[in-house]
Length: 188
Image (tube, rainbow, N blue to C red):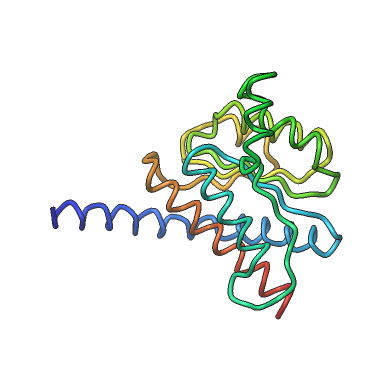
């Protein structure tokens, strides 16, 4: 077991080292979020499974706090409204659960972040397409394989891995970096 533990940790470290190559993109995304908040806009996130958990985690960091005791920042994770998700899935299809909520809540200039390890989840793709159509700034977080999200999102932060757990670890690391940069810039 110890050999496997060390192997997993080495793989995780390798992914985090690779994320350094995304520093310019992470900076640009952080600046977009900072500007959106300065313009009284919000950040919306969504994903499925572990990506949903990451979306909810990042939204909570903005609403609550990251390091600083400061004003709450408006952020929503769309999958947390189970009545809306299940009603939309039942009435329209699961692939539309985020698109319908984007239509209801997103405004021009908002930030919409879709998280998908494959980058091909139909509901995340549809949500980002609708957000882009509505004038939101669209950001994808995916794995390294070629995917649909990278073709439609204004920014796509592709983790340097094809292994789902390592991709998800990369997503939350990048999410934490963004939360740190946004909080530091807005609140000193």
